[in-house]
Each structure stands twice: as structure tokens, then as C-alpha cells.
Length: 171
Image 1 (cartoon, rainbow, N blue to C red):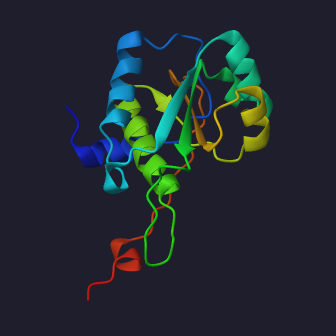
Image 2 (image 1 turned 30 degrees about the vertical axis):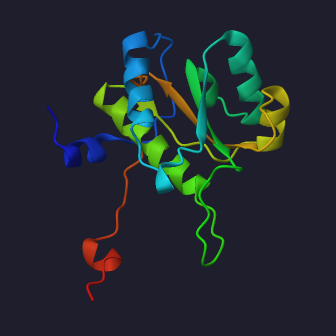
């Protein structure tokens, strides 16, 4: 079994998938990781749409038109509830996006552990998505995570990471 740092190093933005279906056991595993994610004041201001039907996938693909994106067998859409997200009292900073980000990264790391690929997609048309997959008022799409088996010819960009000295300050 991989340790956590190995898992973090292995995870990358997969941008090409096979047509092999994701097993229900793997899907439930990554969704359970999402469910267990922490959130500010434990509000859990999220809803996760699992889109796997051909009709649903076609709608999501209209919101982010990239050839690689169309190869994913499943899209998991993170929606935040703007009416229940925690708001920091001193400056009114809303934390729904932060909460969604934590849970979505749980999803990505759990998928990596299961040998699946994911990619954060935030560069989509949220208004079109809301039109095509309507949600109740106050629910806002934050991220789309394509999920699937990584294609053997999937490009893997070399990741450059700053050193600890560049990002950590001890006071």
C-alpha cells in the first residue's frame, strides 16, 4: 500500500480516458471519501451530481468543449449551497468554495488510490450547466471532476513544484 506522500506524487490531471466503465465499488469508494471530507463548522454545504448516462454526459460536455474531456465515462459535479456555506463573521468571507475544494481533492486522491484518473475542471460555463442540469435556487456549480480509467497514451506533464524554502516561512 502506498503511503500518503506517494499517493500525492502519483496523482495528476488525467486528460484522456479509456471507455472502460468505472466499477460501482470504485465509484462508491471515492464518493465515501467525499462524504468524509471536513468542512467549515461541519456545514457540508455540498451536493455531488454523478453524471454517467449518455444524455447527461452530452449536457456536461456542452459546458466544457474539449476533446479529452469527452472521453471521461463519468463526471462528478461539485455544487455548493450558498445558503448554508459558513461565512467568517469578521470579514464575511464565504467558505463554500474552500469546503468543496477539500472534498474534491479527497475524491481525486481516493480515485488515484483505486488506479483511476481525475482532473479538476473549473474552466466551464456554470450558467449553461445550471440551465442544462437545473438545481434549486442557491446551488452553484463549483467544479467538474471527470473520472475514469486512464488511457495508456494519456499525456503526463512533468510537474514543477516549488521547494519548501520557497513556500514555507517559520515565524
